[in-house]
Image (tube, one colour):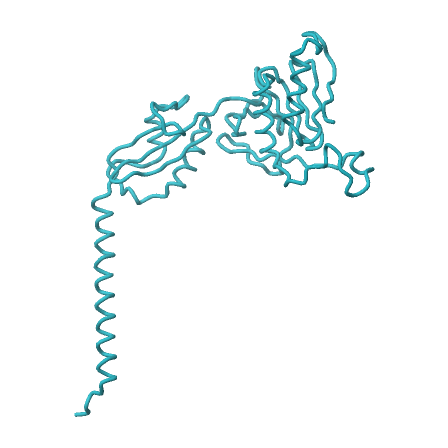
Length: 281
């Protein structure tokens, strides 16, 4: 017989050690899989508000309807589903939810966090009227114009899905104003001095709503116009059209408009005055 060299003995020992480690890892993996499948079963559900408080405000839905919509049942594997897919499924199936987040908590609890959608806007599109939440979620589609909602005059990308449960992304292309075109390159004006990245139309809308609410104009706003990001405007009580220009300095513009419209200092508009108020500069 050929004598086994020391180098070959070392290789054999190393191979056996590797095989032993792999066997131990395989046993551990099998044990973990079996533990997850056998030990982590769904035992109960908890419905919370988006800020994790209870009892949850579920809007027009019951807690049981939300649980049923997830398709998860008691006894299912707690880790046998994607929480993101279940969250998206809830948002799509429940139009009157602006927020729906499904999470899990070991050993067996499924948590559903929600925020109900409130009707805020109406928007005319393809011969119908869309009823939208503040987050621009399509709540329902009506053949006739709904009452008591803010009309959102904006553009949508071609082919946008407008079925109830879908969220809208506004498309409001900017066009250079005559003033900006006439100014020499690099010249700063109140409207073009801000070099920060441009906000999306949806972000501008959220900012606009926040400012209108802060300065007491939101409840009286009847129309918001965002067809052009350089010509933003809103209509107050159907009588005062407020021209905002771009989204730059919205806080200052709306605070100034509120001072005039609400007659804060006694030198503003009367309650019956009508016309156009230009605060774009």
